[in-house]
Length: 92
Image 1 (cartoon, rainbow, N blue to C red):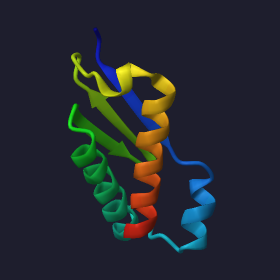
Image 2 (image 1 turned 90 degrees about the vertical axis):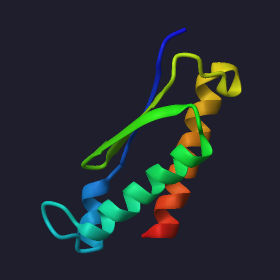
Image 3 (image 1 turned 45 degrees about the horizontal axis):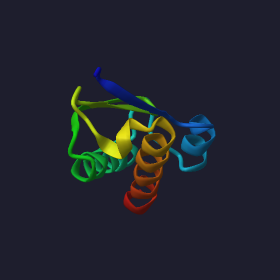
Image 4 (image 1 turned 60 degrees about the horizontal axis):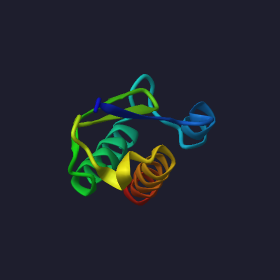
């Protein structure tokens, strides 16, 4: 097996940040919400060994031995993405 990386990238994040008057270059509210969302993903998916965020992107690395959903790409992506998105919205 090999490592799995799930990379999430915001869509139209510039429009979102403009609408919510984010401070440039790094809005503290947005950073805290993204970090809380990432922590929630890591709490829920215990086979993640590291996460990294930059700008409107977050990446999660699963261990080589991860068995989550039998390593089904579509299932892993949809579950990680939906948890991250809902957590971001709740924490914003």
